[in-house]
Amino acid sequence: MYFAALLARTEDGWEASDTELDDVETLSDLSDLAREAAAEAGAEDDTVLVYIEQEDAWFGVVRIDGEEDPRIYVSDAAAAARSSYGEILLTDELLGKAPNGSDAVDDLDALDLDGTEDGEPDGEDGSDDDAGAEVVPPGPLGDSEVLADLGVAEKDLLTLDGSEALSEIADALGASEVLEAVR
Image 1 (cartoon, helix red, strand yellow):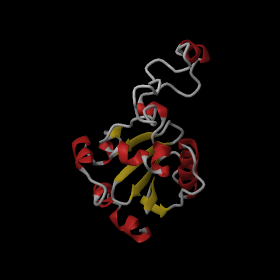
Image 2 (cartoon, helix red, strand yellow):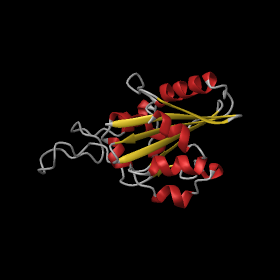
Image 3 (cartoon, one colour):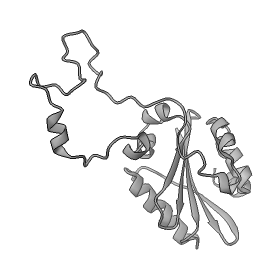
Image 4 (cartoon, helix red, strand yellow):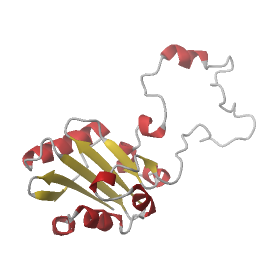
């Protein structure tokens, strides 16, 4: 079970709306959804926050300021990696990996004559079948200062857990009432 909400900062304060993420497949889709919501709220060039909470296991905050690139914070990257909604937030850039469009020549150079890539087990040593699977680090990942100028200091954000994080963030923003109305 998940909960997703959009918080758009307008001249009159914060406006909140819950949102469905079923049609969102990429961070770009999520950013477009947030910008559309901002335009509807009359906050086109203002801050929009997308909050995603997955069964109290993890939460993520995406901040979009106008046309700037989104800033992302995920409370537990390993837990988020097990969720289709979390995978939207765990971009290659956030994980510190090269983008998918890396130079194909480098990929070819990494191949061994036995058909495995450098560092990949050849299967004869009894290694697990999923040894090549990506490992996402547990714990917080991303821009921990994403809400600092809005009243949620980095150290406070890092100590929030999934069960109460949304309420505490909303309190700090002064958006508790509007958020509870959509929850």
